[in-house]
Length: 87
Image (cartoon, rainbow, N blue to C red; front, side, top):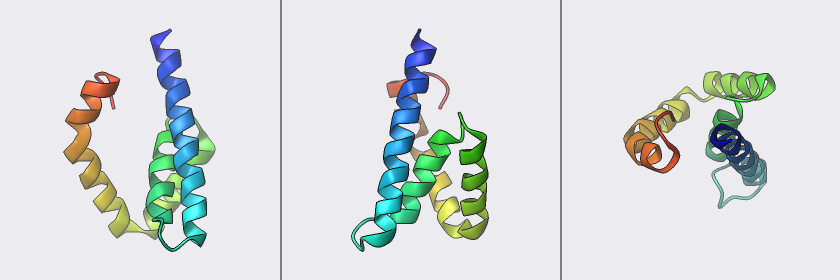
């Protein structure tokens, strides 16, 4: 039951970030690529399509990807406390 709730929340937040990323591509005050990376990263755990798109963005923007992974590593412990052992 808990795994199913975690999966649903991952999908919801993944799509929210992906939509914000698309909107951010057209609005100057949102970081569209960063939101897309976060959204596709979350969705890539559940979807092959999202995994391919995430890998494509990773190749196209390697500097941003490295910053994203550094941020993820820095906040990994905080996320583990909120969402459980594996993040």
